[in-house]
Amino acid sequence: MRAVDEVVEKQAPARPGPPVRRRLPADLWAPLSYAVLAVLVLVQLWRDPNGRVLASNDDDHGIFLFMLAHAERVVFDGANPFFTDRLNVPDGVNMMANTSLLALGLPLAPVTHFLGGGVTAALILTLGLAGTAYAWYWVLSRHLVTSRLAAWIGGLWCGFCPAMISHANGHLNFVSQYVLPFIVWQALRLREPGRARRGGVILGLLITVQVFINEESLLFTALALGVFVLAYAAMAPQQARRDARHLLAGLGVAAGVSAVLLAYPLWHQFFGKGHYHGQPFAPDQYATDLASIVGFARQSLAGNAELTRRMSVSGTEDNTFFGPVGFVLIVASVVVLWRSVAARAAAVAAFVLLIASLGPTLKVFGHDTGIPMPFRLVSHVPIIDLVSVTRFAIVPATIAGVLLALATDRARGFGARGRRLWQVGLVLALVPLFPKPLPIVGGEPLPLFLTQGTYKPYVAGDRTLVTVPLPDVTTGRTGQRWATLLNFDYPTPRGYFMGPADPPADDTGSWSAPPRFTSELLWRVREYGLRPKLTDADRERIKADLVFWRAGVVVLVPGGRNPGPLFDTLTSALGPSQLVGGVRIWDVRYLPVPPKE
Image 1 (cartoon, rainbow, N blue to C red):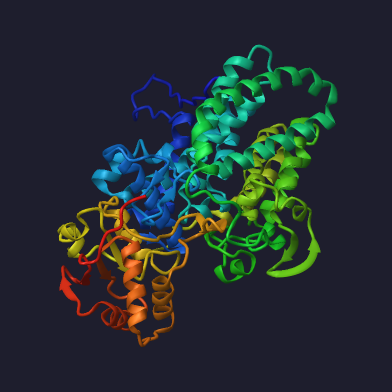
Image 2 (cartoon, rainbow, N blue to C red):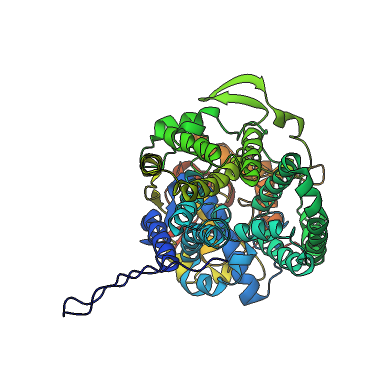
């Protein structure tokens, strides 16, 4: 491990003068600079974290508020960490089959409890960006480069590249990548003699922690390391054979440790109540557009949202977007490092996963060319079919940062002209990618009916509070957000989560609960402004659904889309409403509550 660089400005003490100014050590100003940049990116959310929502993906911002509220209940109410019955009543939600974020939500539960889930979410996003950057800086500066500046550039890229900024629009799990650099380094160090037991135990513990942050990132990391090892073995077979015995022994220890710790959680994820398989969309729906490799993301300084939308289907999936100069500089880094077998193997891993991210057929600037791509051969392989294909590109985005750091460190040995050229290239590549503050929208404030606790008698006896529009993906986010900001003090039906589409007949993954008569009816009313003429049979079916949901009170969310038709439909089904605490409610405690299974 190399010594820490500390540059101290020395002045001659012969004559009195201004006080001596000491420069901050690189290991201090690096995390400080990352923290300042992270706050800048999230500054608009920090102004009112409980009252604002990230605009580019308010649905996913909301689902992570759900995860944090669940973690708060685990700590303060002793709830089951792997399952919740507070959302999607009466079926509940398999939390291991969702990105429950337990490794972060549990230690931060006091923040959620006393300050609100919005504050916890903003904190996790800020620490995720800055922490990921500093984790890579630490690994690079201690083990891979001699220049702290090169390590800082590598950390800057890995923590704040367009992919990371894009996922900061609501994906708390994907920005929290600060464990991954240590997983990578510990895995690679297993080749050293005598490290199998100690290194394997450390790696197993790190893997366990990462499972409770984001399994998808862990899968990508494992795939990248696998391709790296195969590429390295092909290019340096003799060295690979010497390292193999130590590496395999250490991986065996790591697998054993993680298997013991994760056996029950993973069983619950794949076989417990609420498990599912596959995704609710085709593999090519979220795939990387070839043109995006040299484009600019919508949140980059040089980005244009209209152009970016042609190359990316979501503000949280801009996973490449290196910019033209950035892409050239990444390629130049590979050229500069070509004599290094490890660097070439890393470049191969990046290339393979970039190709995988292109999906089953090639898309160019929004146009599907129909050209078949290798991913179509493995798109239905179990585990692989659970990921969003474009996210494979997060791996080459990260490897690009490591290669830039290594090449910048190597560039110190260039001649004066070569160094200047490299410095100019860095400026031209990085400045256009500088992140802009993430956009926000105001969230619907909690009504007095909730903040004053007026709702509590209505949900006594394990009844639910049913908000209309019903909690669901894209259409009922306010109702779910209200429940999560109150840390699920009351249970609620349906919701936005991952679960089986229609169990037991269909356990394909779905973003919402199985449809029912009332959910479909209210969706059509909200979507199209219909005022259906309900029959007595319709009213009985609505009441049957309310009984199924264990309803105690129905609450119409103010504002939104077509509130008038929704109000008329509920009045036709349930009779006159009451105005209580700023919202229209229908007291349905006269309905029976079915026994729990």
